[in-house]
Figure (cartoon, rainbow, N blue to C red):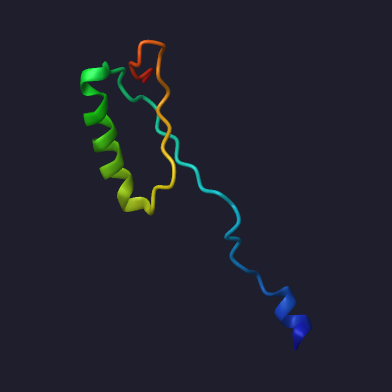
Length: 64
């Protein structure tokens, strides 16, 4: 019986899941927090958010 249990497919929980969103608008510092809040609310239905990264320009505007 242990031989059969070893062959059974198992769920791999060690693989990280990544969601990439394209075509986000370029926004200034005044609307940056609002955009982040909207995206967080949309992604909350997909599961627990562990880390978020938003690329920014030197003047702290979002690159889009």
